[in-house]
Structures are given as structure tokens and as C-alpha cells.
Image 1: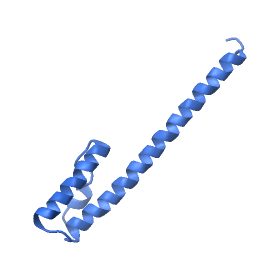
Image 2 (image 1 turned 135 degrees about the vertical axis):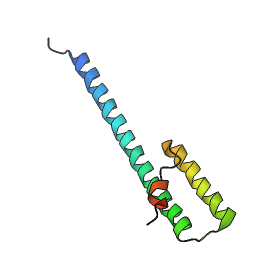
Image 3 (image 1 turned 120 degrees about the vertical axis):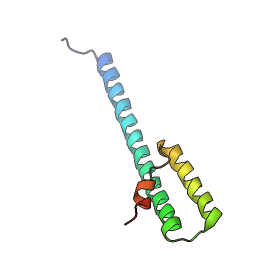
Image 4 (image 1 turned 60 degrees about the horizontal axis):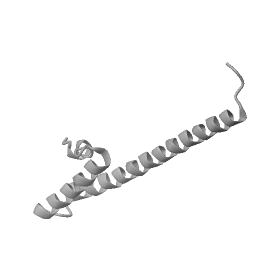
Length: 87
């Protein structure tokens, strides 16, 4: 393996920098989604367990939350497991 030229070294450094920036953006996006899911879970629990909304209105709100969770994660039921267990 030979010695890298200045141009090769710059290209490698640039590629590494772009890779690290992409990792930072992905980590930031994952953190944003996690924060959104935590707040949506809190709201969903409030609606279900706190019974602040009843009947069709409550169902519309839960459905809207589930729609958004599906948009974020691809899994509409992501928040269901924690809030639907009984006992």
C-alpha cells in the first residue's frame, strides 16, 4: 500500500466528514422521533386512562395519534402495547 497523495488525503477526509455528518443527522432525527413518540404516548395515555374525551371524539383523537405514529415509524400500533395492557 503506497502513500496517499494530498488530493487522495483530502478526498478521504471529505468522505469521512460527510459520513460523520450523515450519522449526526440520523442520530438527531432518531432523537426527534423518540421525543415525539414519548409525547404522543403521554397524550394517548391521557386520553385513554384519564378519560378526558369520550366516545367518537376520543376515538378520532386516538386514531389521529396512531396515524401520525405510523407515519413516523411505519408501525401504527407502536404505542398500543404499553397503554393497552390490563392488570
